[in-house]
Length: 260
Image (tube, rainbow, N blue to C red; front, side, top):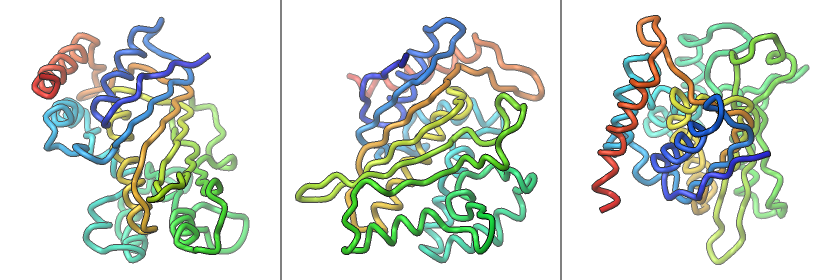
């Protein structure tokens, strides 16, 4: 049982088509939704009127597109400090402010660079992948895996709380110019509150790894093992489906000039 979304050129288009498909399903939810984006980097900013429309809607719910994207990759820190210096800046400055508990800070990036182990220093999975991609002696093109689910911290009775992004797999596509792709798996996915920011954040992650490893950034594939058209809250009140519909109508208006 799966729901394939027709391949899309960018993050905004992929968000719209995924929302359209899942919204049409019974209960406005679906399982094993597969989203494929050819270029998750270009136009993935608030300069795109479509993205700005969603961001304005979600900013009133304290879940702006940029806020969600930064939980996956803090692009501002990277641009300011570079790699690997920005890892320490994130740990020393950001984590201390946002950490909710030892179990979950809300930042997937934390688990990429500080995954807990029984003993010793938590490994920086992300930088390890970059270093192996740089290493000419590493010949395997399909062994760049990154785990975010932690069985010690994430197994509880909450149906939605905690981490939703569980696993990522980078692949190097051989050719005249080697291309880096990424597949990400979500255990649960809110398509209104989180999906667009997630796609943009993952695109920035591909761009970072590809740039640091000297590769071409390629496609992004996202598998939502459960997806739903959620209704975020604003000032403590659940947003109505009609309000979501109005936001999507504005998105489609912003997209109209692009389709002309």
